[in-house]
Image (cartoon, rainbow, N blue to C red; front, side, top):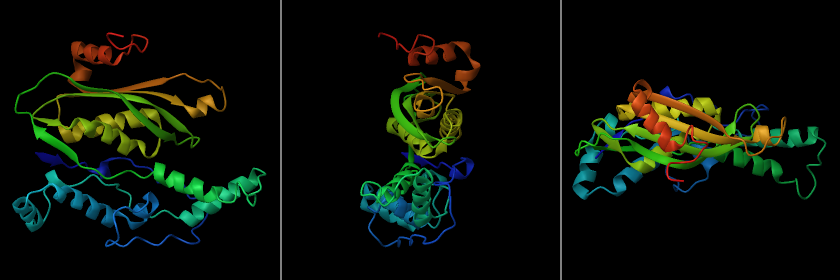
Length: 281
């Protein structure tokens, strides 16, 4: 088993929270020797150090003693064993974010001193930090010893993200497929890649392409196909006020883009062009 590194420097991860005011009371960084079960905003404040330590601990947990010793003796980790961690090392100004929420409520004519709104700035700021903090993970791959050369598809993977235009959610399902080359990937990691990239200020088109590009670059398959179907709250709750409509985006790489028969097979399996009905339904 090997673990393929995802270089998040190649991924355009947006800032975790847009700063509306100047920092007034930055949250203290969490020390590397503190427990691992810290909150998302503390994990962000601690930056790459705490995340890397946590991931390394997870990687070593399942190793045999001899394997763990060999793992610890490596002077520099090989690319197969690097973890996926957020690229951005900036800390989140929680005090500033909370003050910004309070200022917004006041500007909207709301009384932030009321019992129901008194703690709302903290809750809103903490919620946004959690939603915009990617979780570290490793992209585990295995040799394709059986020489499997047909489509691998994970369908109807739920996801949610935040529209960067209105800061409102969009949510739906994803269909992610690839044609294996020399290696195959743990199926759960396809969903983890999506979840990692969705924890950001996003637009659906970019998120679709990022998932496809990441898998294409770091799994080196013969082809990749990604389809996202999502409902956008910026359409449902404001403006045109349309509920229940879905926006469908796709990104195809390799054989699934170049070969018409392979492309048609993938799109048929995910229900594109069939009114959203999957085969057999």
